[in-house]
Image (tube, rainbow, N blue to C red; front, side, top):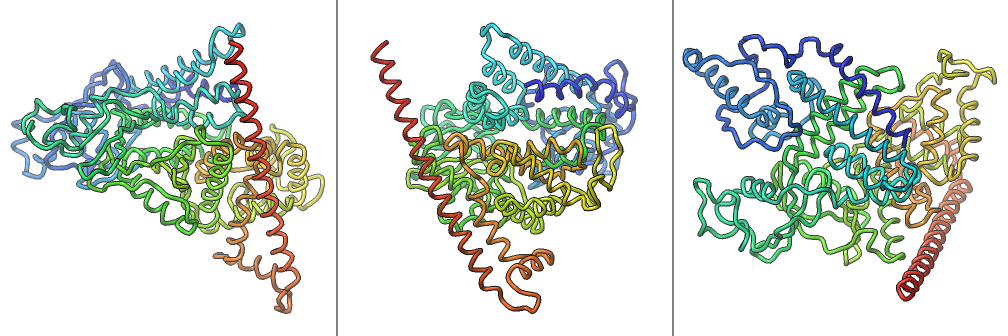
Length: 634
């Protein structure tokens, strides 16, 4: 865990220095803000009315906003300016509305979008919040490390880590959800504890959720029979109005990083799930993002070859979009259309009339998660999940970026149902072809081709650079010869063959490249972070079902299909050279060999799947027998 947690202490310990360096004009708590006319840089609605403020992410009070002109001054302004001043008064009286304006939600029909400068600018005027939040991260880190160092068994490390991540909020919970699928990084008992963050995170009060439902869905009366509305004391509430729903659970049935879910029934009999966003989630995520941005600015260029801020911008943009459930509804529809050719992938149907930024209703899915499946069903769901996600990577370009166990279900009718489409990845044509080529190269052990695929994805630069030790400067020459592609490919081959699972696990490739990164110049294109997270998470799920699961073999048919339908000039030349001679004659023998190879690999994959299912069934039977025996003996 030190390898994971130690980097956290660096940005936290450097935060005060970084703040002074990057925010010299911040309004400090001990200073009185200068009296200046407000400079509205954001488009504002002319008639904003403040709502009740949502839960704050910190108990420290914010410094006051810059004073606004008096009412008399406002009245003397032209009508347009007076309208802007009134809007500013409403906004500054309610920090939540001001923060919504930062991400563009103040516009009619506005959808949440991420802008680094606006977000950081908002919190730079509130330094006490940022310093307090950094201190919370530091204290959580210290508590987790203390639990990790306890050797007497008195502390459950997994419980402590889960509790701290849950308390830190949505961003930390998402980290925990990813780690829960990586028993190769954390001990299995810790991974099991972290899985609770997927669907059993600490819930927020039901009353707050009911208020969001009533406000966003326009409930004039009770939410459901026997379930009073939190707005019943408000003007306009009609106790005799028909309930919004025929039924709605009194407590949430699941709680995750950004929201929690209630089960209900419409008046026409349709069963639905109602998802409600955590109060203050937008504010908490943006505050955490600002703290991280300041820390990244301080260490940029020192510990990483990629553009850390660009990488974070991509991740932060995805999280901000995820905080608007209208984006999720659109993403779900696009994802379903993109994989309709598979015939078994589905998503819950959302109800447009009951979809807002903070709440959404969708059809109830009758099905089970991985932990509730029989071994044969678990193997089938795992295979279908990997097939669907890899098809998105190399064929459709639309990838579910958060495929943990809580977001995938096997429906009772056999469909594979994906949930939660807030976080998605888009892959360009050229990158899809590079990934397809890389998959084929891993399986055929063509490491020269694999290095070229890395160059095509932007993971390795042109020209390739190397150094003998970390303190040396990068250079484009190597003592072993002039061809750095071949030299790097040979080192890659040696390391892959020495690494357990080198030819079958994506995680093994990540480890190898991480080690090689000290001596070969590698970059981290921003787009690749979410894809890496996707496949490490997916591979973690597959490893629970079959330790020998080969994700590359599942992806091979899609990689071959992409290779046979190229969209870039380079890929077309590659295909042409594969099937035609220099005299433009068709190479029938070579094509037949490729088809035979693919068929053999598919047969081998199916055999492995059946063998894995049999092994899993045997293990489950043995565990059941042991459990029964223990019960009889106890």
